[in-house]
Image 1 (tube, rainbow, N blue to C red):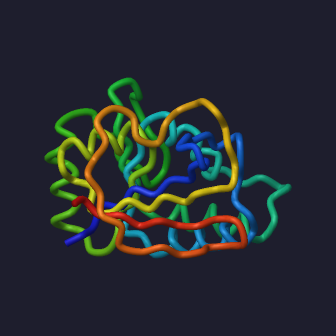
Image 2: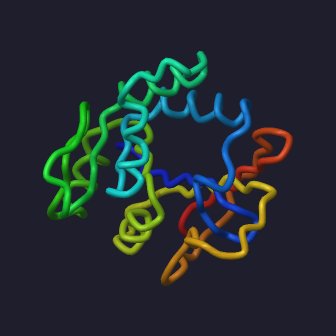
Length: 176
């Protein structure tokens, strides 16, 4: 049975914004290894559209970026959207019955399934389907933006802390 894991980079004050801070080379390598090991990913529409960047080759990429693109392209993806009509390679559109689809994936796959996007994570949290939360805390204060946890906050229990690079700490929580 697969485990549904929501991981997200966040500022010290609890906001997510992929344009405000990026991963160091060490953290990027960590994400490459995680992507290689995942059984798949479930994305909300907005984050999926951002991640589609990795579907096409870019001549300016370095070896690390090519490694991430390869890992991302190789894993199956499920995209939750009512507005998209199609998705890219190695992706399946999920337009209806999110709970049944995710329960089915968890039952048939082995390993970890990444959840991408705070809005989708909130919906899956409300359904009681997220098994683990991995918060990557960056030493940045944004002051405003999209909060990691919008709406009702889940009750969580800290199970581990890891320093991933010189500035980023990963906090791992499970539902309490």
